[in-house]
Amino acid sequence: MVDEQPMVRHGFALSIGEICPDARVLEAGSLEDALDVGRHNPGLALVLYDPGPPRPGDAETGGALAGLGSLRETLGEVPILILTNSDEVADIVDSVRMGARGYVLKTSPPEVLEHAISLALSGEIFLPLPRAVLNGALSDGPRGNDDILDRLTGRQRDVFELLLAGHSNKEIARGLGVLEGTVKVHVRAIMQKLGVRNRTQVAVVAARNGCFSGEGEG
Image 1 (tube, one colour):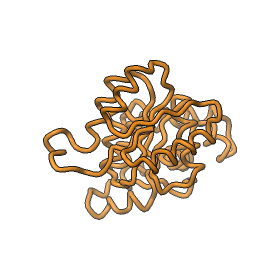
Image 2 (image 1 turned 135 degrees about the vertical axis):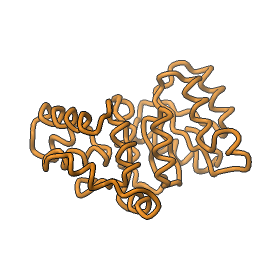
Image 3 (image 1 turned 90 degrees about the horizontal axis):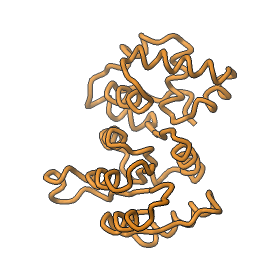
């Protein structure tokens, strides 16, 4: 658990301990400390990382998320969840493009953190992309939402919206009352129509085009 604020860091560490009772939670108060922990603990299963607020000089060093690249380089395939107060779509998109396994707002309820951890540990990606956040991007960015949705069938739109809400294929199948194999077929079709190869790229395209997570959002 990487956060520069000791009380916040410890509070989240306790929450993680409740979610994963058998886990040993290590704390780091800075990126440098986190890199050191990573070098000396090769068996890490997951990292939750708050990159902190923007600072002077970020533009020269790659921005507040620059530390994510350093963590990825040091930790290899260890999944990293961004845990932050920033609900900027650009930060969400940049995080997943840089290899984060999820993006969790600190204002989210505990069950969201539990869901994100579960997805990250199972190889999935959690993205909030809440409607309020993406609607805020509509006023500043291109309104390509209709073009994307026009490419999808009605059922594919249902799956698409649940994908953007961060649900796994199994959860989507349960929510729509269909087989998981059917969901996988729809997901592949969506990716083909959007010209992407994975769920992360689906989310990036959706964010760039001002899509929202829709009624399927949990």
